[in-house]
Image (cartoon, rainbow, N blue to C red; front, top):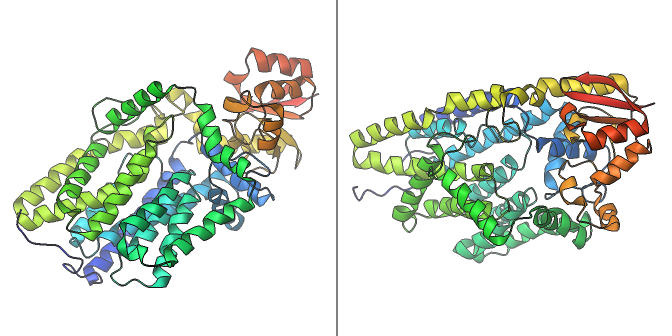
Amino acid sequence: MSNHYITSSTYQKDGRTTLFVLIVASLLLLFCFSWLASHRLIARDEGFYTLASQLILQGGVPYRDFFYPQMPLLPYLYGLWSYVWGESYLTMRYFSALIASGIGLQILLMLRGYVRPSLLLLAGLLFATSNFVFPWYATVQTYVLPVFFLNAALLLLLREEQTGTTLFLSGLFVALAGMVRLYFVGFIPLIFFLCPRVRRSRGYLAGALIPLLSVFLFASGEVLWFNNIGYHLLRSDSSFSQALGQKWHILEVLLGLRESVKFDGWQYPILFFAAVLCAIFYVRKEAFVRLVALAGFGLFAMSLMPSPVYVQYFCVTVPYFIVLLIFVLERILCSSKFVGIVSTIVLACVYLLPVRADLHRYTVSGEGVIGINHQRNASTWSLKTQREVVAMIVSNTELGDQVASLWPGHLVGSRQIITPGLENHFGFLVADKLTENERREYHLLSKAELLEKLKKKEVPYFLSWKRMIRSGFKQALNEGGYRKIASADEVLLYAAR
């Protein structure tokens, strides 16, 4: 490569072509993610995130009134959006689509001035077609919001002129990312110690501390610990060696060393190794690369921390690896236009190969999709079926009736009340490991307690998938005198006689 050195002034940041690319890319990204929001099959975790947002509108408070195993900001933001646009899966999904489009624009803003406009378009294309992005960024989960906030902080820190206000806001945005997903809090000290300009100002830490201290308004330290950390430690029964083995398995899948039905193609390995290459050659020369690499590889390491760890956790690293890949392509084009063009075409062809098949899996067939697995389950997890279930509940119950639902997402969009302790379908995993007093304090219901409630006819309605009505629940429903009054797809509604 030549010794030509790219600075942020190599290309005009506000040139007409660049501005045109930013506008067109933003509109296309918004269209793509809006389409995905309305077609992507439901992810199981969306059930408790969307219900938590609905509970906020009903006056509920995370931790104090219901179990919520994350930091508390997400349900407030989605709840506010729902207050304006209506309570439903689709309206909340559209908020995710808007934030995802914003992340795409942030990627282009980071690269603006460093790369030619054509590569800005390529960055937007790689982002929208990543099988680590479109399956997860259009859902209601803790992926898009923290990435958006962290990107906002990075864009402020990349400004050539820093003021006390920009440093305060950058600290605030990093903390807001941590208020959605806890491990993003790790960037507060990372950025503080690794960025000299940040260390010289108190504004950054002041901005970061305000949101973090506010979390203690929600509950006591013990309750906060359980919801955000204790629960996650308790739900895993793996030994240390088993946990390490599972993390190694995930790493092999991520780096293309092991086949997986859940993720296909070479997209992530391409992004990861290109980011490694960029870091090796340019992290000492370019502050821009240094900061983006810190975010990307920092998140990569943090995503390995939970146990068990899942492949989709690493979707938060993709925006940063795309930025680093595009930077490398710009350097290649500066060195040899022919080599750069050929490299870009080959990369794009390989990268785009799995897109069609992955789109079909996540929007139609459900084959290999986490939580769905087989095509026979796809219709059960469609937005259409969820709307049918809500209509069934509303037409067969009265406003404010209590419903014991084994999956909280079935009640999103209705005004019925879920049985306390069932706000999160993962609660059964740890409830039996807690004492009765602890279950009350953390708002969890064990399976045995729910069965007892059904036997005593303490809940007027019970909602579940047909396949879940096995010996334990079937016996409890019979003893309680419940009868099936309605069904939608595989979902059955029972009422006490």
